[in-house]
Length: 323
Image (cartoon, rainbow, N blue to C red; front, side, top):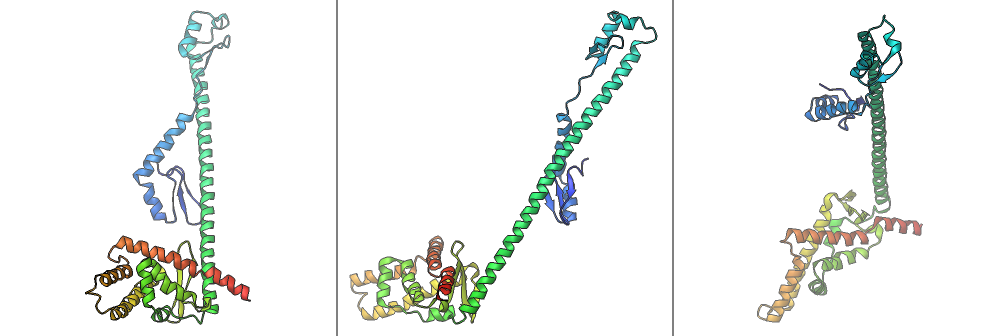
């Protein structure tokens, strides 16, 4: 049973199996791997490959009288038996069995040397492959460490900027409470759809603020990562929960404003034209909220627009320009 072929502990507290390309930092996991069917199968295959790669030397049987060589024992026997070699047949102190015994021993020694040479060559190639794997593994660990440090440094930079330069920003909840919506905004939503209507109310009034006073900033437009201010402190909006609340709150503001429209048109239920307009407004400000897939698409679209409007990178460049 093969257990230890191609197995080397490498780096610090890490174990590697070259046969299966498996590595772990837990010794117990490594020992469990040695007992697995996959390891037994791959290790056995690897061991079988080595003899196949060994080029076995052809057996050579040489006549001691004339040094003529034969590849088979029968060939040499025929050569001597038929007395084709006069030098050998004249020597009475030699016999055929001794010659064959000697030649068999020499052939076996050559064969063993050839197999040993090929086996060592295979092991050397395996060691080289393991070394490359170890170097690649070490390189990947280094890259992971650098990425982790870069991520930490980026988060530190963002937090420092927001806490020092945007400390007077409004809380997001307070900003949303102060949003205004007019009947004209309702008509804009009816004519242009849910997303455009939200952008018209939220984004437009957000842009009226100085970047340092805004309650939301986007640190990564590609991943749509936002930072929001709540309870007088900046925090990362994990999972986009705060942005989702913005959509819900702005829709609620528009629904309240719909009451003002109804007061302006008290007979809308009896007027087919006004009733149709009222239904269009309801449909637009609802944004197909009952359809999960459509709602998700709407949210993603709004986030992309919001990310472009609240770019933290642009705000920091503007800060440097003013300085």
